[in-house]
Length: 308
Ligand code: HSE
Figure 1 (cartoon, helix red, strand yellow):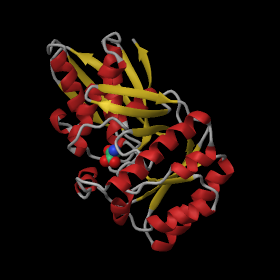
Figure 2 (figure 1 turned 90 degrees about the horizontal axis):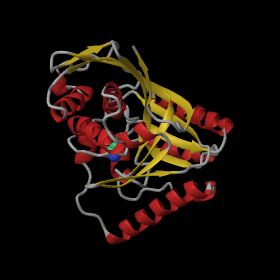
Figure 3 (figure 1 turned 180 degrees about the horizontal axis):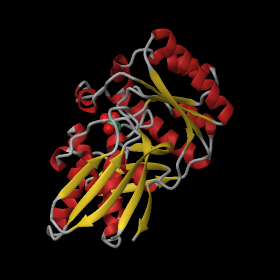
């Protein structure tokens, strides 16, 4: 029987100034999923991790993605999916996106690559809708494509892959819970024009900095005057971590996705390791358990292997 084994990477969404429109894929951590086709037109989910996520497909991020693919293809068959999550749900490093994107890519391969990349992103966004209440692709797109993605628009979908120089990414995940839906609810519906001008200057600067490999411009542009001032209140130690990491040589960084993880970009691995020390020191002192990653940008995105 045909089986697809998928490695779906964690991702950092928003990239500080690009709320809902920018994201990058990480080389670590990765979820692992195995998908097979079954005769019955249902989705069967088997969890092989400690997170106790729902196995009812309509309540599971991968499940709703696979249900949407079944519906689109006329309910002629079903899927069985085994999920081994290494990206902790609610961490802010694209756990739901990895489940959603992994399910979409795996199912697409089982169906002989029946779907375009845009269609895979559309299917996968159903998972983000379940997880956060809103469709967005800033984790999904880099998870599938790798590298840095710009989501210029989602209606209609317009994803631009942005070249980026080699960058080292340090992530700290303080073990507190910040639900994406809550972190979205605290945001203001209306913003000042002066803030918008600053923000779009930074977004344009960041994308240009990536394309030109201009590390100073990347660092200067990693500034968020709209979302971070509100969301950072949900993350103990945020200001201290950010200040300390920049003093340790990081180009800059901020909240990863909707938090609570915080990420920093650095030019080289030694700096990324110094940044990790700062993160560890702050959370040890505050007394909050944490997990860190020191990794690089994943340039390939979801990896899938088909076997018979
Ligand atoms: N762009 C999303 C947000 C990413 O910040 O809410 C988290 O899913």
